[in-house]
Length: 360
Ligand code: NAD
Ligand code: DAU
Image (cartoon, rainbow, N blue to C red):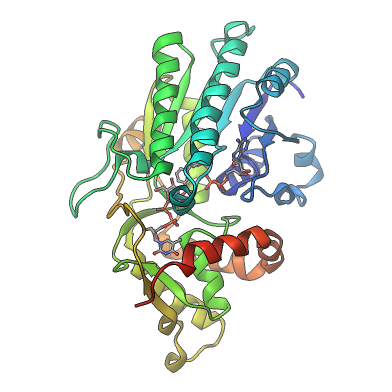
C-alpha cells in the first residue's frame, strides 16, 4: 500500500463501513486497510460493490486488535499515516448479559492498539503528521435529567459495562497523549442511524419488526431520550477531526435531534405503513409492546456540539425526518443484506434479550 494509507479498525461494522465507503469516495488520494475480527457485527461483504477504482485503494485484513504481532506487521508494512479506531463491542444490552467481552475488546483492544501505534510512531519517518483517532461515545458522560447538555468538560459517569469500557479506553488514549505525546484525538458521539446498522439496535430492529409485523419492544415507559445523528454526518465529522483536529483534544459530535424512543417508533410505524399500504385501522403502532426496562437505563443523552462547530466548522447536513426516510428505504431495498446478517447467533440473541422481559 502507498504511504497515504490509513488503518481503520472495526471497519466491517456499522459506522466503520460507512466511514470507509464515504472516505474512499471523498478522498481519492487515500488508501485504507480495514482490520476487523469479524464478530457477529462485522460484515466484510459490505465492500463487495465498491467500484474498481475504490476497490484498488481498499484492503481487508481479518484479525483482532489485541494481536500485537499482527499489528506490528501491519504498521511496518503499511507505514500508516493515521489510525481511525472503531473496533469495539458496541451494544449496551449485550454488555449487561456478558460484560467480559467488552473489557477484552474495548479496554485491552484499545490498549494493544495504542502500544503498537506508539512504538511505530516513535520510530516513524514523519512523526509530526501521524494521528490516532479514537471513536468514542457520549455514553461515557452518564445520564442527563430533562435539562442540560454534555460538553467536553462534563465529568465521566458511565452506567453500563459498555460505557464503562469505553470510558476506560478514552482514559488510556488521553494518557498516551499526556504521557508519551502520541498525537491522539477523541470523539464522543451520540446515537447514529443509517445503512448497515446491525438489527439489534433500536431503529433497524423496529424497522424489521414492523415489516414482519412482530411486537415492537419498548423498554420501560418508552420516554428515554437520545440525540440522533445520521451516520454520514458522523463520518464527515470524523474526517474533519482527523484532518483539522488538534492532537490531545476531545470533540463532542451530536445531531441536535433529541427524540423519545416512543416518538421514533411512532415515526417508523407511520413511514412504513405508508410504504406498505397499511390502513390507519391496521396501524403498526398497535404492535408496540412495553417491556421490562434495561438495567441501569440512562434517561437522556444530549450533546453540546459547539466546540466542533466553532473550531472545525462542522455541523450536521441531514434533517432527522429526511435521513430517517432514507434509512427506512435502505432497509426495504436491502433485505438480502438483512438475511445475511441474521444468523443463528442473531436469533439466539433475540431470544436471550427479549424472552426474559415481561410483557405489559
Ligand atoms: P459495530 O458493533 O457495528 O461494529 C464493531 C466492529 O468492530 C465489528 O465489525 C466487529 O467485528 C469489530 N470488532 C469487535 N471487536 C474487535 C476486535 N477485538 N478486533 C477487531 N475488530 C473487532 O459498532 P458501531 O456501531 O459501528 O460502532 C463503532 C464504534 O463507534 C464503537 O467504538 C462505538 O463505541 C462507537 N460509537 C457508536 C455509536 C453508535 O450509535 N453506533 C455512537 C457513538 C460511538
Ligand atoms: O449514544 C451512543 C450510543 O448509542 C453508542 O455508544 C452505542 O454503541 C449505540 O448502541 C447506542 O446506544 P443505545 O443504548 O442508546 O442504543 P440502542 O439502539 O440499543 O437503544 C436506543 C434506545 O432505545 C435506548 O433508550 C434503549 C431503547 N431500546 C432499545 C432496544 C434495542 C428499546 O426501547 N427497545 C429495544 O429493543
